[in-house]
Length: 200
Image 1 (cartoon, rainbow, N blue to C red):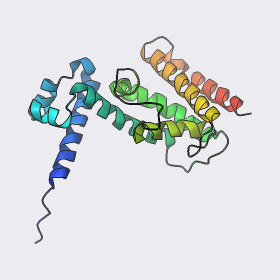
Image 2 (cartoon, rainbow, N blue to C red):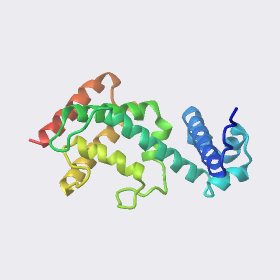
Image 3 (tube, rainbow, N blue to C red):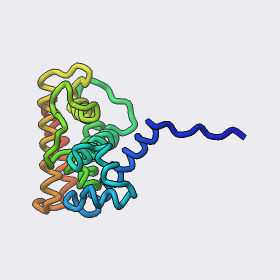
Image 4 (cartoon, helix red, strand yellow):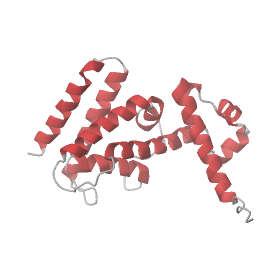
């Protein structure tokens, strides 16, 4: 019988890193980011605080940024779906997936969404050096408004930012109880019509 290969040091570190991020996210979703401290997190997963700081020297802020990056990956997957995406023209199916996927993610994972878009972060947005996870999420928005993510024109980026701003506003107004949840379908159809009309 062949013994499984021993886990390498790098694999151990990667697994531990992922466990810390997952635990922090679960804790934040359960009780908000104010309830997440390095002490509570260390106790919850059975690590010492020095182990946490060994992975995240900047502490909670760095852990929140790691949770945000995981969130960007999940949101991009939810928005893009499984189908192939063409590069030119506004594609209503993709646009609908983006709008519905964005709002669903914001509703289902509010603490992760806050780490991504509302709370102070060291993550660099809107720059060539932005992390891949952020750029991949934004590329889906560019495609949804009919742009070419591989070589976006300035107008494509602006349209994508307008879509993002619209969806963020809708998500925050819904969460704050400022708009009626039963009208979400109408708002979604309005966004689809608005961005379809921009492409004409």
